[in-house]
Image 1: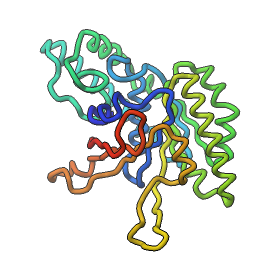
Image 2 (image 1 turned 30 degrees about the vertical axis):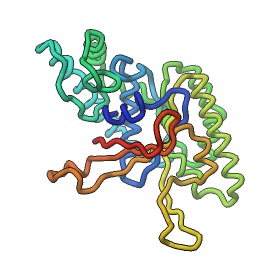
Image 3 (image 1 turned 120 degrees about the vertical axis):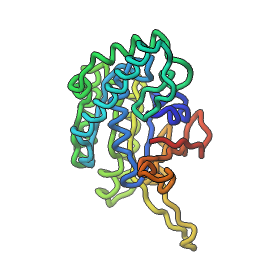
Image 4 (image 1 turned 30 degrees about the horizontal axis):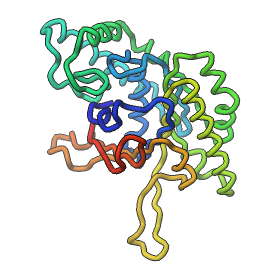
Length: 282
């Protein structure tokens, strides 16, 4: 992630927590998920966890080609940082380009050290194929498939792959938002799935990120009271330890097309960050 987002979240995604990332279509949720799948493989000195990622795809939005491009960009960025350190023996100035490695390691603050250079050299030896091989992809076509895999196979898979440090569920809304006529049954299954993911996050010391869609909640008496908020209702929002919203910024980049790449991440719920806090990134 970017330095601004790392500072907002006080170091990035939290281990042992269930994090929701909500946003409208095209806001960059899947892009960020794929970025995290690459960044989690970085050494701790560079803000990663030197581990693999499980990607549960319910929408079919995961792109292996795009994931490979992200991995390639991340490795290239690390090699360039390492080269600059060797040539100049000075910390890079402003290298925050959204690739997940910043000027001072995990949060982007402070100078790079010999420890960072050693970690950069380790990353420089990696290949795109190695990064891709540490991302374990599973396609779930319905809530039945998702729940069956989560309850019957996911824990066993994690035991067999103890280096996994991130689970991405993209998205939680797709299989649960439209496949149920009974809201009570849906809420029970959501609660059971959330409890399982939280338990695995704690027992395996990993981070869990679930993307969510946005919906419009209309006022009971006045249409002006309507608001856009994450889908799935109060029952889901209460089970998430951390809730974030990502949105695309329009017309704020000063021309040249850069504004189309700018995003804002806003905190709805976080045990250590004030609700309403936000950060802008690319």
